[in-house]
Length: 357
Image (cartoon, rainbow, N blue to C red; front, side, top):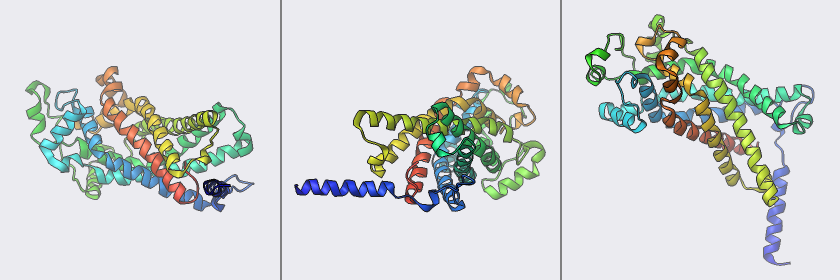
């Protein structure tokens, strides 16, 4: 036996031993079907990092998207992604390009904490209801997808309650334009006093929350946007999780059929690369499916829409704009976000001894 063969056998044996090692926190209670609370708590930490960091990182895209959604139809703001970014930079510099990043970080961090942590808990709960892991592992793809959808959707309901106040503050910050913009950007026939803000929100998150509360009759803070947020985020999250899990299964199944190698045969770096790619793919479908509700949430942030119903705003916006306005920038943003979120979450779980996602 050559030295190279011996080395390879040793490496393979080491990998096999590592793959069979199981953290005590992964072991489920036979009666309840749940794992130790520490497991879910650690998953929450990973979820906070995954969502808080990624959303804050792409806040410039969010500023551009929100302003185009809110103002471009009336001619007050450019509709293109690059044009919107350029105008923001020209008018407000770096402060404008990063506007709202603090409530974005904390709001989406809180959302991610509950989204990923509670998803793990609900997934275990629904699996137990259907008979446990042995039954579900042998179940049809449709059954598995139903469990993934139910678990992630259930988690998102709670996650959005945590996100909503931060999201409302963030949108209000981002739709606030410099005083000179609206009159200068549109003809007198298009500018009405209702378009122009009656007050300017602070860029300090805590102060801004107090101001939103003080103007709650107008802003409907803190939960005025919760229903459309559910309308956007619950389907988004269900697609995000089902799309990711299903795509990942298909990828590893195809690799296994082609090469005979299982997921456990690959190193952590390769697994996480596949995780990112599957997450990005799922994110594209998330963006397309939830674009109408995202447009409405952004539209609600401008004063002239404060007292309008969601149906009225949708009718005024029109079907084409409702589905397509800001879609390109959102696909780029959500695809990148979703891929990075799964990568960060998978890395976090791996570091904690739970394996990649």
